[in-house]
Image (cartoon, rainbow, N blue to C red; front, side, top):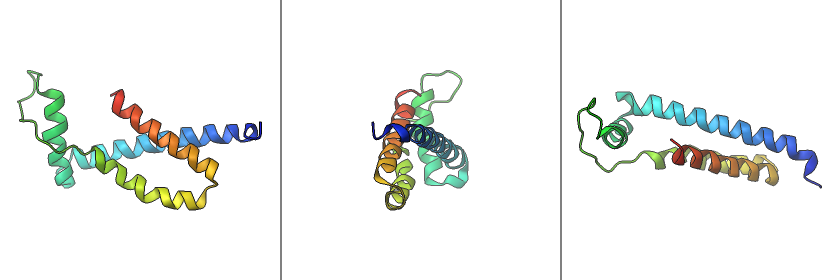
Length: 112
């Protein structure tokens, strides 16, 4: 019952976290994965992601699948930001944020 007054704030934090994660993931995917300015991310994205998704499609030329998944690099901003948020936010709000980040990331990985 003690957490009930914070429930709207928990929901707001969870929704805002999911939206921020989705925006950041989309921005990184678009700017680093689909433009040569992404360098290593661009090459990995083309050789891993697109080769994996489109290798059976007759519309796309077959590119050999190589190792080079960019997914671990999405964790770098989270790991840099998490300690700052842990210091700033009360623990219960940080916990909601961390769980929402995990769910948002897993939702994107499982249901794409």
